[in-house]
Length: 178
Image (cartoon, rainbow, N blue to C red; front, side, top):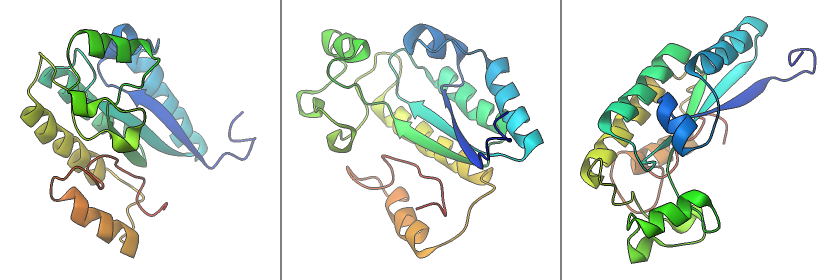
């Protein structure tokens, strides 16, 4: 059906490769099989796929992030987006993060672009989250079928290669699609 509707590209919100995190924390009722089948179908009918992923969700561990990295390797999307989890005011997850002390007072903002870094999770250190985040980006990039080195991606790569409170380390993009 979607190929008949002239879709050329879809973003599939995998969010997490860990079914528990996806279902119980993020309230997304999708199995790993559902997600992998969606990628297979799109590949069969010639629709490009982009995976939407989030790192640093409450409850995540190194193991759950590794499941997300492994899921990218299994799904083999054409490109990927990797975001840091940002709890937005007015959402259930924001209230949980605030209540449990996961947010620093300077990290309490109302939009993604002013949110500086990872939260204080009891399950994994900020330092390890940053390392796994960059590993996730590197894995996604290694499997990226659309990677085209353009002036824009070269500039963003400079930011991605060094930690800062701004730049591409906050958002991974679909290369060549800016």
